[in-house]
Image 1: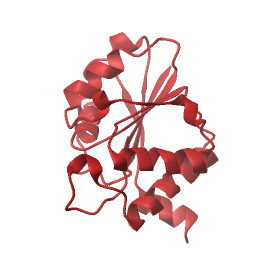
Image 2: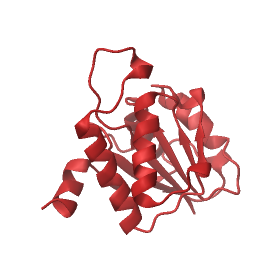
Image 3: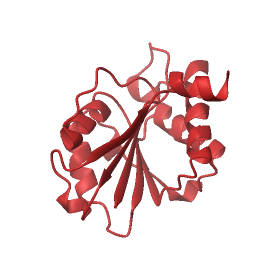
Length: 165
C-alpha cells in the first residue's frame, strides 16, 4: 500500500516576491500543529519532497522538528515549486518503488487539484497547512485519476482543538 501525504505550506504574509515569502506567526503555529499530529500518529515518511520556496522550507522544517523526521530525508526541488496538479501527479508517478510513504510539501491549487484528480473527491478549499492522506495499491507509475482513496483530510483549525484546547 502506497501512502501520499500532501501538505500545503503554512500561512504567509503578502507583499514579497512569491518564492521569498516567509511564514508568519500563524503559519509557524499551523506547521507545529501538523508536526505534532504526525508525531502522535507515528507517521514516518520514507522521503519528503518539498518545493524550494522559503515558506515550504520553513513549513517542513517546523514539521520535521516536531515530528522528529530526519532532515536528510528531505529533497528540495524547483520541480515541486508548482501550482499545477498535473506536474505533481507526474512527479508522483515517477517515485522510486522503494518508497512506501511519501510527503509532498507544496502550494495550492496544486494540492487541492491533486487530491481531486487522484480520489475523485472535490474539496471546497485547502487551507494553509492542510494535510491530505491518500492511499493507493500497486506501483507509483500506476497511480492515475481516481486510483487513490482519501483516508483523511485535516486542517490546523481542527488540530488546534486537539492540541490547544
